[in-house]
Amino acid sequence: GAVVSQHPSRVICKSGTSVKIECRSLDFQATTMFWYRQFPKQSLMLMATSNEGSKATYEQGVEKDKFLINHASLTLSTLTVTSAHPEDSSFYICSAPRTGKLSSYNEQFFGPGTRLTVL
Amino acid sequence: KQEVTQIPAALSVPEGENLVLNCSFTDSAIYNLQWFRQDPGKGLTSLLLIQSSQREQTSGRLNASLDKSSGRSTLYIAASQPGDSATYLCAVTNTGNQFYFGTGTSLTVIP
Image (cartoon, rainbow over all chains, first blue to last red; front, side, top):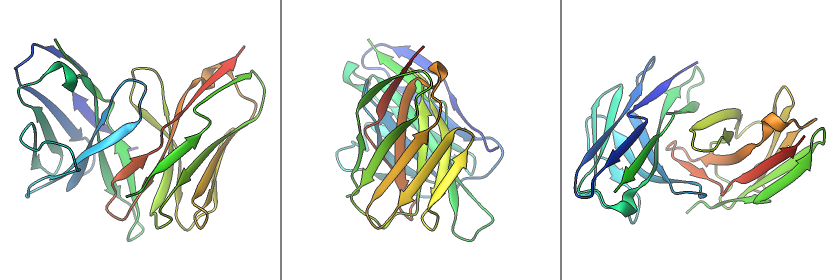
């Protein structure tokens, strides 16, 4: 089956630093990828849609200048948390749809997630 | 905006019981619905995917149904096992493939 990887799986950083998280589709190309955030004991919330070759689109309430997204290629999207603060500590998960044989059917594949802890 | 709700929020059952998890969504114009399992501190494991034109999907002891017009889906787990203990999430997609996740049901199967 299709695989989506994330790196790193876990990161601890000091407040004020920037952290980059990578999301890769390993065996298929993805022109679109999605970034989610999950706080403890809560469900996943969509943060933004990453589009290859164009700007990302952000959900309401998500600061685009704080969460920089770059879709560098058809298999890689990066999320950079700039000037991280303790309240940014969360579980970040990406997903990528793979187009199926049916003309309009896409199955989403999720990465394993990245645990960010900001001290 | 699509809102997805799951009931119950938590469920505890003895091993061997059959159980049903419920998911409801406010906008019936979905593209597909997917059930996931999440273990503590881990990512998502896809369990079943139901396309909007389908009524149900089965995989082993799992059966998921979809009633798109009423905005509901159920996940049936037969003969529950302690290893089934996890949080179960349902999510719906619109045509843009963005997922809207439910609040999750935390399942504990007691040996």
